[in-house]
Length: 80
Image 1: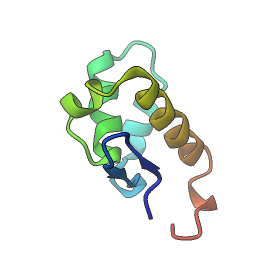
Image 2 (image 1 turned 120 degrees about the horizontal axis):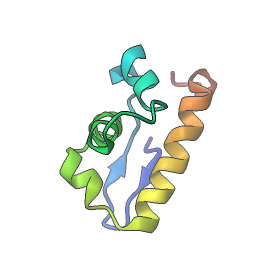
Image 3 (image 1 turned 90 degrees about the vertical axis):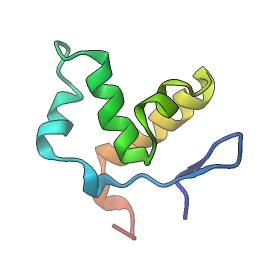
Image 4 (image 1 turned 90 degrees about the horizontal axis):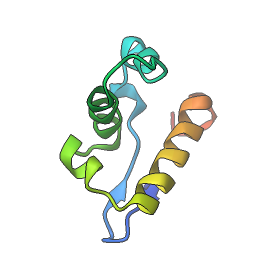
């Protein structure tokens, strides 16, 4: 089941199994380049970094809000 459906109908399912502890910590490191965060988040979303960066702002916002909810409590998903 998809975590979010984009306006073009593409279903995105977050795969937190692809995220390493090092990458997770980098998400909260203010000194890292934005490109690094884009690469990490796009990987978890099953997208390329360019696809991720080309999302319309509001769609990107919905995606990241939902993704960070999952990241806050990754084991709350009964399928995890």
